[in-house]
Length: 275
Image (cartoon, rainbow, N blue to C red; front, top):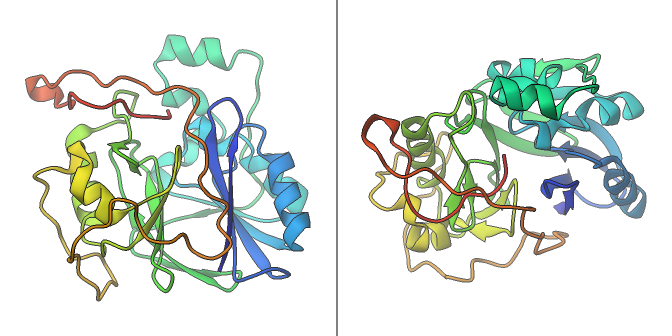
């Protein structure tokens, strides 16, 4: 499998292009701000034919270029319905005053063709099979895309190397993201490659061993997975899947989490990248 990743825009959001191999159809995951030139370069370099854009969630740093890329390629966008409104109104993902200031004078629209994702659905597109897991917490409509054969998880802003997604923006829910991490991530084998929305790639085993946000979380079997976690985690993680340009660079600026405080439930500890 060919996976080419690059950080896009001032948010340094990782955009991924996924295909069975060179000269094949491909998927584009999370084309953020100014992602179009990078997507065009990867497509040309590997002679790829895009068939769909997939969004792990609706925050602006992940969907900025969804409509332009879909329009230029004549392809649909896939997103969870709980985040669909953010495609045309990304200011909803921020407190009102912040959103108005950030997006004053900017107009965003949905692509002509939008397909809504559902928990547990299997996408068979471009010769690639991805399982969709709804993983709310960072946003209500956050999802991950899991490729079982190569053991790759596109985690969006659910799980990062050494950290997790922030939950202090509208729609964020700290207990929900902990549940998503336990249900979606920790049930996977240790040698699962994690390709996050920001920062370098990692592996489930490395995060299980060292990520402070995962300490004490119980696991549940991942839907459709016959493998079970176990063995001694390799701190350096497994070898990257074929074709991955690694490592991708960290996000532009990490955000400090709020302190843990009763009902707020925010975790004190390492900083968390991205929006």
